[in-house]
Amino acid sequence: MASWKAVSVFSFYIGTTLGLSAVAGVFAWRRQQPAMVWASGLLLPVAGTLAWSSGQRGGPDALLAVQALCLAIGSVIWTLINIAVPGGLTHYRLGPRTFVFAHAAVQASIALIGLTVVRSLAHGLLDAPLVVLQRLDWLALTATAVALTTGLWDRTAKFSLAGLYAWALIALGMAQIQRGFVPARFLLWGAVCDLAGVILVAALIGWGLNKLERAEGKPWGHWTSKLRIPDAASRWSGQHWFHYSQALLAFTVACLTVWIAADVTFDGMGQGVALFGLSGRSAACPAALMLLGTAILMAWQSGCVWRAGWQYAALAAGVLFTTSLGWAMMDPTAASPWLHRGGNLLISTSMMTVMTGVGLGRFLPRHSDWISRGRRAMPAFAMSALVLLVLLIASWLRSHGFR
Image (cartoon, rainbow, N blue to C red; front, side, top):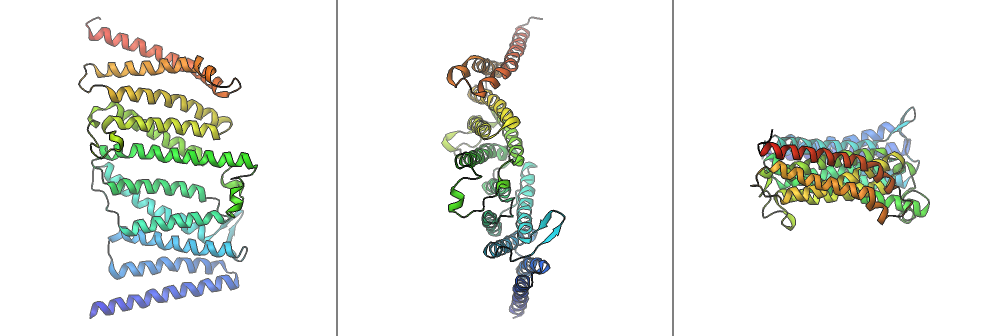
């Protein structure tokens, strides 16, 4: 009997809070009061907190998910109102900046979900038990995706693409947590190909958007007008955050690829669950290949400094791919393993020296800047091959007793 009374009391409080939120929303629309917009939106997380308090299932993690879910719902509601009634709402301004509740709410939702994911992944990397994801976490993730997608139709939401990029990384993190690979080495092994795939898809989407822009002569191309997405140039053109993020993640994938391909203790990891049977060190090969594709796609869509950087990165990724193939196929019981690895790296750098010096000019048009970039990189690959050759000869002589 007492439990039913508690439920009815909480239901009354929740209903009252939601009613106050609706009333504040009406006042915000009718009287053009930005404070009422924020009051209406922030009352939704209050109602969510009351609902969580009535059961307290899942602990603090569930409370974070509830807050993220409510904020995402509030963002969707106020974004739709802003789209349906352009100029019908007023917002706080501080100098040139405008503070819109719908924007702040979805950004806060991303931050809350990201906090849960980062904390759980940190536990996994420290070989502590992973946080168990609940249904509320996935509901919050879905609601946030809807809020970010809805923001594409809001001309003032310039962060939508960056938000969707962050959302994809959070979804990837949640997938790793749900999969439950432990210990930390197994977690990193399982994440390398997934992370490489995410940045490859992101590069492909970015290349497609830039190609549409060039074909139609306006950002995002003609298809956005069919979907009635506002034509906002600042959303995509000149977005350096995308290049910085892709470069950082690509470097992370490259480091993990080198580690996995070189470390024989990864052998047998993922046996029976790996896609296409690429278990153990073999997982480094598709990751390196996707990294190569990412660098090429990023170079195609970039200009000036970024284009040159991604072209050099593509050449380096080519060396990484061929080297990872040799390292992954190396017999783990072979004598002098690092001598064999050095030999594989020497072959890769030598092949890239020939390719950048002669090969690119044979297969690409004469005016292609890939040829000039390759010739500029050729001395670095040639010097690397020469240094490796000297080190390998010295190592071989030392291993055979020559001093």
